[in-house]
Length: 413
Ligand code: NIG
Ligand code: FE
Image (cartoon, rainbow, N blue to C red; front, side, top):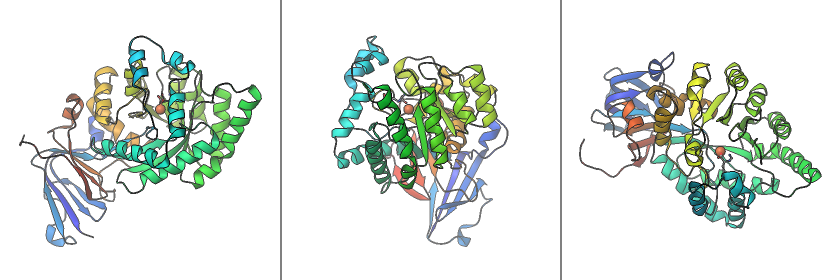
């Protein structure tokens, strides 16, 4: 089984403190982590853990030279399974064409649906694995991953199967979500009602095939509030965790409704109102804020400060997708959250560790008994990862005690 000691840690983020803000980070200076097999057995001050002679051999030692070490990051919102590209749309939008207009002209999500439908299973799996690998290189060890570029029930089940296959055989741990994204255009009201019923009907099968959650996109041009509620109720009956893309372009009331239905998370929230904020705090629903989409679409920044001050658990995700947030970088989202959304560096770290993990049903902490998902950063303190943007700072990544990614060696700091 073997053991691992990560030692000479200058600053350790355990994310296992108490309270809010920096105390919740559970910082330890001059620290070490001891791992046996897949699990942490000790994370704390150096010299406080079991002695090497008492550990199951072989004992590997990773001396990190005073660097920052943290739990693996968790990305709670990604759309990593697609084919094709939308670079022209990116360019057009930057010249002032609106997202909704591009969508009406058959671009946007529909363009990706066409490319994804035409792509081979092998190409889709390879594309998703490449994206997961880029996430890993940014310090991400666990993520949520949505289907959503199939639209019709059989196509969504195909994507769910491919998502599960892509997740297997690579190290990042993936929590699959079935996404009801948008109804295909041109449906009559009766056809649309049939589609919603058919999507609801596949949810037990989706759960059997590995989906852990259902997400519904509620907005103008997507599902209505009534359709969303119907689907979420069906998801709940099928035993799935509930998520909802809510209040992104227009205020629909979906965040509040989803929270009342017991949703684990709601996503985007640029247009959330005070009643929505109160409902999230009351229900303990995680707010997955997605600065990459706000940046790309030039939407107002989600009001993280208001949510945190109201007691809502705020997480950050990349929203990785081919149109509105083409980024695998969770550290970049931390920078945007700090510079544009009023979050402190400590809040940004909590958002990508314990709060994101809560949204995907894991712990996000480094403490005895936790899975040994560990990142060594080319940084001295936690704030540096938020301030120093646009370059990858993760240096080594362990998942379940195994070294799964390492940056090419550079000059000493
Ligand atoms: O989360 N808002 C809806 N869905 C995605 C966008 C997907 C796309 O444009 O391909 C999102 O931003
Ligand atoms: Fe999304």
